[in-house]
Image (tube, rainbow, N blue to C red; front, top):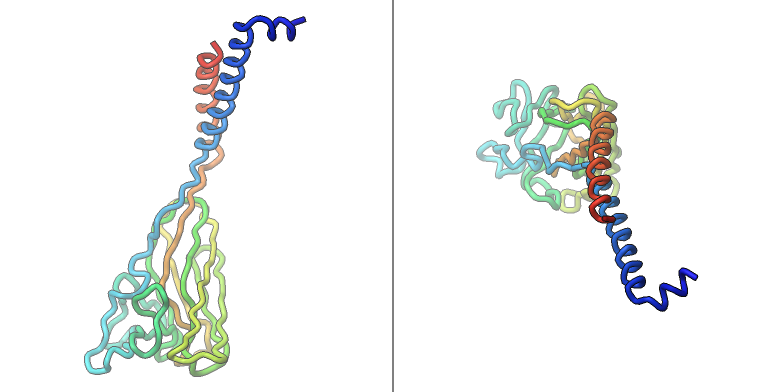
Length: 239
């Protein structure tokens, strides 16, 4: 009977259609509001001078390379980076550079080295991206360790077979870390080659993407607030 009345009485059709539109609007608004309550925001790159372009070359070597480390004439700092152990070579025209531009480091200078810089991270995840290759001389397989000190380090290897200074074989690599609390962390790259190695893994084009995830209390508060607002909005839409 109700269906028959709806077909025969125009204003009932209009009323039913408007009710359907309100319901659809409500579902759409609910979905959008709930989704926006979870701000999984990723920050822009926060690494300073990830392509080592602030480094300087010793006059007279044609910009091939310059060794940095404790006791070296060039010192221990490459722009915002510090050589905290061993030594590394800032490399220019010695070999082809990463596609991202700038310079790169041979992580074995006069011996295997390690570099670091401080970065501010938000609790969530941090993905360290970088270009990896190797000095095409020396042992076949070179090993690089990437770390945010206090967290679990990750290691990467590069096989030099078939590569040369003109064809370095740059490879995009990444290491993702879980960041337990917001604050300052030390980003570190270290060669794990034998102590007498002077031809090491090469790194360049370094960046970090930091995705912040709200904690449980924040999430519950955001969702609760959204639902309260949506309840009020629903009443208006359906009235």
